[in-house]
Image (cartoon, rainbow, N blue to C red):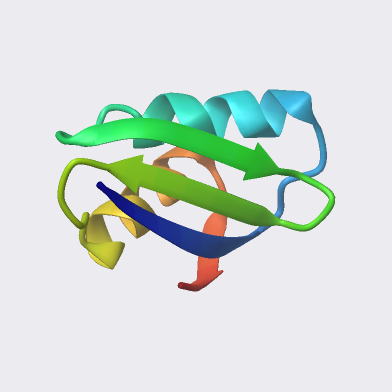
Length: 69
């Protein structure tokens, strides 16, 4: 198991969290996503490490931006 935290800019509500979760869970190997909207933090759990680029692309598809991993 692998777990990585990302800082995401632009999330303000539960709808934001749902959008980000939906996009990240499409990445092969992802087993869980936890979003902390007030902290702007997303934790991605996966079978194997997932590339930061893949997570960034998924977050951007949801309309937000990864600012650090």
